Length: 499
Image 1 (cartoon, one colour):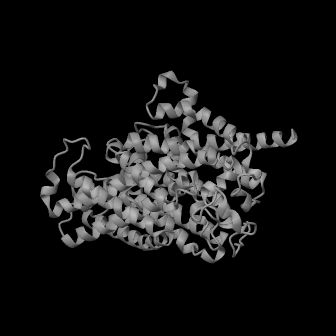
Image 2: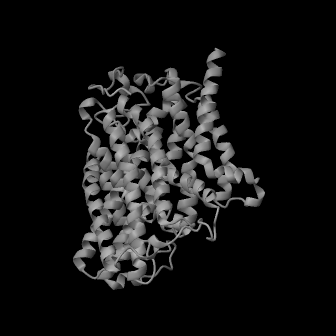
Image 3: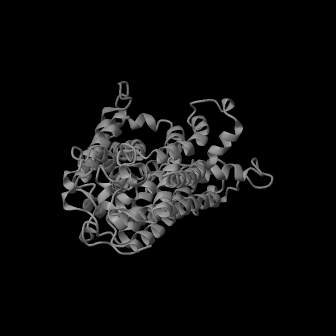
């Protein structure tokens, strides 16, 4: 992979592109002199996004399904080792050409067809944005209720289904998110660089507190696997492991697509590759372990396992600790939310109408959609929404990654005409702006997984779908990626021979 980055806009970008309807300053290639992200920035990006409440609680579903702590952490680590591969591959184009995800999609899907993968990515991000904003706002509410107990007694008998105090805390945290978006990408990078060391330090302090007060890490770490010999689920490990692994890949599958939104700011390919490889898998495994160990210790300290770190922290009586905890949780959730759930959809919505929607406007649209989705209702059943609907949706995005990688690495040999990506009459126009080959490959790759997806989100009964397709969905990300990769290249080859 070439490590060179052009110091200008890009080697073949013309200055008159500002007149194109496909161009605005937020979607334009990032010039070399504005590339500031090195290894540390990318490591901080992934440490910051991984060190969050959902990661802390991630292993709980795996342990609840029968794994012991080491099997759960290993599954999380392996899933992130796998997903970082397409992440690094897709990041290459962003670094080499300075282009964001939706512009990169134009090469394979067409200048207008790129809106299909962009919007698929954007709407799932809006769901995650709302959920993370609710988590941050609710953390503020819970800790404020310690200082002002009357806040915890408001009425929920309204159309929102939450108290006024909860809604105000939610909107307060939402406004902070929007302020960071308004400040731009440099503010986001600064926030990520602050959060990364802070959250690692606080996580380790929480781990030390749990170990000291429980006299060890407690019964969860001593709990045997339910899949061991003479255990209730003996011999069933593989049947649970595969869908669990797919879920771990799905956790960051969306970021594996839109990583060019960040890698376009990289100083070199080495910086994005090393930074991501070091930052993602290890942090996910470490923070998941902290969650398991601390929860195990709470079984001894409080008499019951407490998986939510906010609930653990609210049991501390020292006001200084509570204030520091509130600030840390807010910074943690804020940095993860902005990086993972706002940057991409902001670019994606901007891509719909570049001359009318800026990055800031796209971020505001994301924020408004996130509020309208009433995330507090979505997380009322976290296992149903987060681990079935959103992760399932993310798994269905695997075909998009297969198409993008097949097009860029195999079909185009990493060669893009950057100027043409911003022109309506270029080679990337295909059929009225749509690449029928990419759309067909996407449809064909999603189709085998769709029956299992409907079962996973409880849209249809499992009895109404052949067992083969239910089991196939366990491999959804792998199946979709592979089919899309092969079908796309086959159709491209056939089309070339026929012309």
